Amino acid sequence: MIKSKSNQNMIDVRRLHPYRVIQGVQRRLAEKRFARLWEKSEAANKSKAYLKSIQNKYAGQRLILIANGPSIGQMDLRVLKDEYTMCMNRFYIYFDKIGFIPNFLVCVEDLVLGQFAEDFNKLPIEAKFVNWRLHKQIPNSHFLKESFALNPFFQTDLTQATHFGGTVTFACLQLAYYLGFTEVIIIGMDHSFKEKGVANKVEVRSYEKDESHFDPNYFPKGMKWRLPDLDKSEIGYAIARDFYEKNGRKIIDATIGGKCQIFPKADYYTYFPKA
Image 1 (cartoon, rainbow, N blue to C red):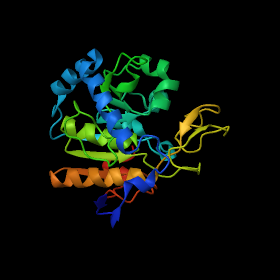
Image 2: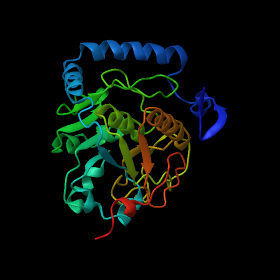
Image 3: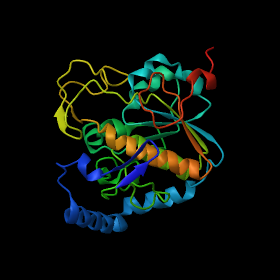
Image 4: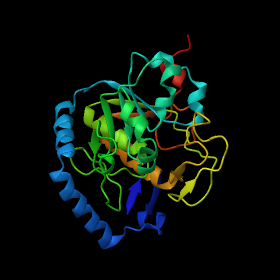
């Protein structure tokens, strides 16, 4: 169980996913199996060497972490061109509108990677990090190995199994810390979705327009996606916040109208004034 500053009650993570297939012994066996495969994988070994070469490379610097909420459409992101930026999942469909390519992209969700593998393979980003389980489909990438541990934890050595905490944002925050960034400013993390249902359930998109992301074609009709788990996300966010603060670093949420209450808030235009 995990206790966070945002919720002083003890939270039993197991209650959040009663339907998960991998539980208990099965989960531990999966962890061991994938650990063996990770150690033997040529793609994994190349990624581990790359990760070691960039650890703390950006010590003392500031990173803008760009999430994919509808609020992104309210911001002029062109002012971020000279900042260190990290995006996630399908943000690449917005590259033309902002006029630059972010320094880093992270995607760890199997469904997204599998359905848009061709897109990810074409991305002109050197520092592209994806879930190692898709290394055969998206070979021109660097890889993170997912941990199947029941409780989320903050991994400081990304050459080892890393918990994704129910959201790619948690993976990004661990990567940002590993790279040495002292301050992370999150934008576009609306923490609210139009679709309702059982968290983590895989559904086929039936909406004509995607109203939960910055672009109506982010998840086109007919594509599969996994319903978000906001409770588990908040647990991961609180873990990341506390770890950063304990080590003299900070995470700021500058999302316009964002509903997440885990991180200290700030006005985006205080950091990046309108032209």
